[in-house]
Length: 385
Image (tube, rainbow, N blue to C red):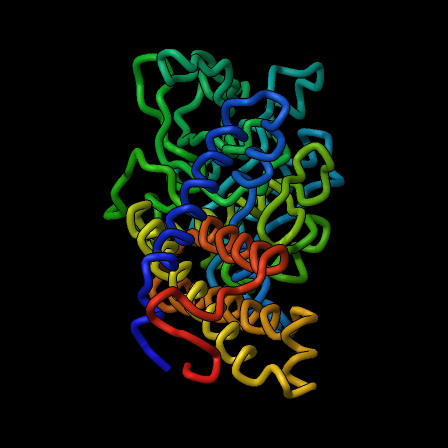
């Protein structure tokens, strides 16, 4: 076999054409209106979702020893909510995050007063959620906010609980630490809790990835608090609803409550876990190199099949396309597995969507055209190869 054939210009041409075609396809899907759903589908796809699923496959999640969730889904009256908050406070938690916004003063004057008393008793250890509204895209800032009714009369710590899904039913993989509210900076709900626990955690204006590693947070029903005091004392307690349909969102590991997502974001911040996206230039370079190597491997199959074309077994695998399919599947498995190991060990996410699309395109091309077994002036016949 003449190894010069593996570096013939035709391999480079095939790889470059594959890139050009994918570039045209990407441009068309973004700029042609009726193809916009395709672009949205690709933008909502991330292999990190599969990585988290692999991590959880057949493995029991590790219980969190720091954070506990108190579920108040079945409680609606402010007097009852106040009683639960007082009970949590009596158990001496490290911090309390209340992901409930108590809008407006209701007719229940006693309930309002009891709730304010509970807020005062919690003191600085409690952080309350607020909601930013009316986003101005031109100025890149929110212009209004919804807070609990006691926010103006009491000194409390607050953080925004907005999730970056834009109400588009997308998987929520990211969180933010700061947002602009008119002329001021507002910090997120999980960051405010984390900063209370560790005031050396710095803020950032970047969009960061939530770490959905295989951890489970103990969930206690509010009615069962007395039975689980050991999960409250000295813990960070997240209070909110776990079963309100309007507050359920999509995540890489399934549908979950907004409160649970805030808890994963809090865990990510406390652990200072930063998941880095590999730079685009690296993704393109890696895609080009792998695409070229796949093209060479497919060419090698063509030479191998031609050399042993009289062998019925090999001829069957070649003509049916099974051999080519197996080789490409091995490439895809290898790419995904290496990406998972890099993600798991180093916290680096390599976006291989382009790479996988190019590999799929190459195998499709092999189905509709025969793989060349020689190049002019390089290999004269299968026997000589």
